[in-house]
Length: 252
Image 1 (cartoon, rainbow, N blue to C red):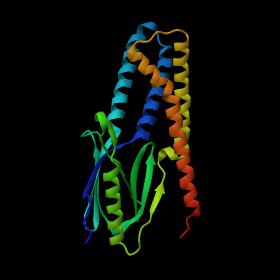
Image 2: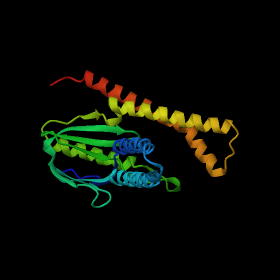
Image 3: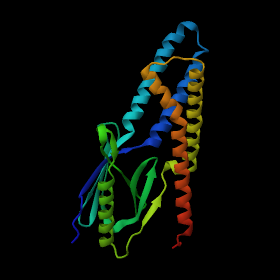
């Protein structure tokens, strides 16, 4: 009888695609509202600015709160209990499932930005994802939980194999960032980061004096294009690799 290395695995699912797209939407709507504001009489503009600013702040807070969910997978002898719920109570719907391991049709490894996920597809078309947790690293900085995540993945695959007649191969999956819309959004982020870095560099070249804290911010702004470009290239390579693997897989 198989004994699980770790019965349960709990992690915070960071819906980065939802957060970034929603924040971009808030930014665009706020900009459109400010343009509309210019058409109002001067006496009304001050009140309208306060209203638009308040709505924008509340929208950003709502996006950040609802962008994080807690996922917990618990392994049984022949089934998997899945629980997904909002990280902050009453900010979203909970999702629970009791999945017999014999009903698992696909097990995929997914990369979402710099994070790893396990994705399960069932015979009836349902999809569940478990993200990689983060643990305290040097100086209290969170680092990916490589050991525990890999051990749970191996045990999950072993139990699925024990519950099914035929072995289940681990596949490679795509996240939003590996799709064409995701790549286009990352390309837009590269352009925005380049513009910010260009303005920062121009201000420094023009003789702008910076305090210590401002110097750190300026250094981050100058490095933004490199970080965004790295994520874009990484996502594009991942897409090409996964699609190449799928092309060479035999069709049923």
